[in-house]
Amino acid sequence: MSLVLYCKSYRTDLKRAVRLARSVRQFNADAIAFYLSAPQADVALFREHLAGLGVEVIADELIVGRNPRLDPARLASLPGSLSQQIVKSEFWRLGIADSYLCLDSDAVFIRPFGRSDFLCENGLPYSVMDESRELLEAALVARKPEVVRNFFDEAASVQSRFERSGRAFAFGPFPVIWHKAVWESLESQFLAPRAMSLLDAIELAPLESRWYGEALLRYQAISLMPCQPLFKVYHYAWQLDRDRRAGVGLEQLAQLYSGVIYQSAWEREMDWPREGGSWSSRLARRLRRRLGRS
Image (cartoon, rainbow, N blue to C red; front, side, top):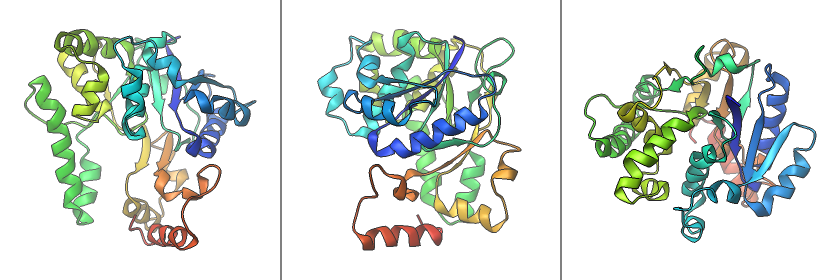
């Protein structure tokens, strides 16, 4: 297949994954195949709750097992925020498709979509890539200088490893479209000559989309066709608060984006099987969200 949808998930995000799958079923105009992976221990749970939604559920272990240079024990010792990056980045090794739209569980489609939203006429993917000016400008207005500082620090941490000078690019936010040839070029031309695995790279700089993007710029495994973010991503509650005050809702966003993402931390009531924390902590979270401070 030229393109599939793929989501890496955990049981805590089960309800979010079901919501995503329902939005895919509603808006998937070209019937693009949808794959979701979870730890082997959670596969049965996801298959039960996603039954009838057209999702092929596979085990994370099947993906990482395709790379003999990955140490499963070492991978299992990483926090989930890091190990999931490796699983997502290794999905190409299954050989299911040339390209995959890599989704997170908290994504929701809000309008019809098809292959032409993600692939050029030559069948190669668009690459999400810009200088993140919208986010950085909003951060300055909101007096969040640390957001700007972190962006340039994170960009430099990977950019320098490819000896590239010049502008700092963002190769996200998620979802992003990845092509197997770019991951293969990173493996053969950067990691293998240094006796590294992707796990080593993520431990050095936990930014899988930047590793992909910088490899694309350096080795040019596919032609670069940049595009703006595919989904409206609310990184911070103050962004959502700003849009709501301006009367920007899903109807307006659907004119520009295929979907929307609200951070999981704001929707803790969707944790499976229930929201964690005491009654007071749950109340405090919702209060901060309502005030646009999360």
